[in-house]
Amino acid sequence: MFVGDTNFIITYWNRGAEKFYSWKQSEAIGRHSDELLRTIFPKPIEEIRAELLVKDCWEGELTRTKADGVQVIVASRWSLRRDSQGTPIAILETSNDISGRKRWEEQIQALNKELANRSLALEASNKELEAFAYSISHDLRAPLRHMSGFAELLRKSAATSLDEKGKRYISMIMEASNRMGCLIDDLLAFSRIGRAEAHKSVVNLEQLVHEAVAEVRQDVTQRKIVWKLNSFPDCYGDRSMLRLALINLISNAAKFTRTRPQAEVEIGCTDQGKEELVVFVRDNGVGFDMRYSDKLFGVFQRLHPQEAFEGTGIGLATVQRVVHRHGGRVWAEGKVDGGATFYFSLCKSTGVN
Image (cartoon, rainbow, N blue to C red; front, side):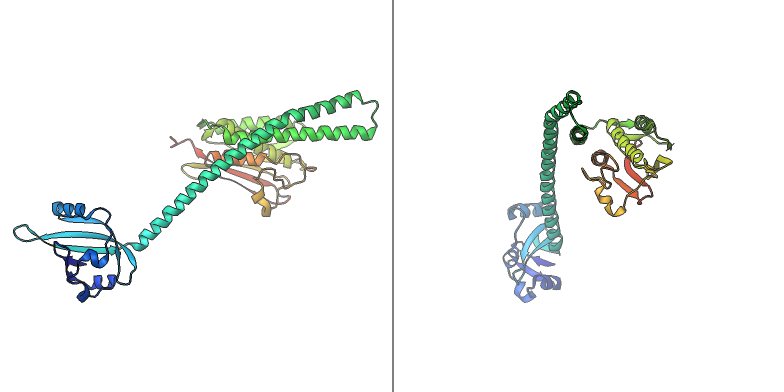
């Protein structure tokens, strides 16, 4: 704290000012405060002086230089003192050091700006990658159809002239082209999830689960699977996207229980709080090693050999993308030869605008 006259000549300099600015009282008194402290104002001093005369006070941030040359930023408050006739006679100034806070604010602003730039770059990169994947997948369809079609014609027209080895080669070509067709279809579906506009509404989750199970059961009619379906509340989201995610998870459970004499699949829900619910799909299948759980939701990532279990390695990545589009989380727990449980979170319908 210090006091100056109306010309900003210092008349009083307390110990706090002496300690903070490193100017002794004898060095400061009689000096012009702005010259002594090399004050940098946020706006012209004439405007500050005019506000001070009208309101008898002024508050703002000032940049000043201490005796050792170090610049500091202070939150300063000026109070105008008047005599009995109302004539201004002195200005009392109190200041608090906010240099550290301002440095943190500047660092946070710089980090936020960098983060925003990175987010924009990542968003642009993702859009380019999705457009590339869509274009490549779409363009691969025509030559693949030709490959598959001519292989089928060759198998029919040359069936009598081919030996067993030749027939096996054609079958391998057909199987490979069919697998590539599935990869392309899944890749296109995965790309569309990121590009499609989400149409969110209140969804009857129980009905949706029963629909997804009914569709998967059509593909496993030759197997005996014990299905356990719990009750579900309504949720909020894009119905078609959620249906795709459920079908992928339930198909996954059906596939990896194929080696079990008695396959069991349970689909349920846990209430996590006022705004979130968690859906799970649990099976008693071959499970997986938790050490590799981080790879489960990657595109084309597989923890089991293609020869043992068919698939393209895109289904779980699609589930994750759907869940992320809904602002949720997806994770899994499993044990080798001890089954697996996949979880994802959703918003409830209550309290959602």
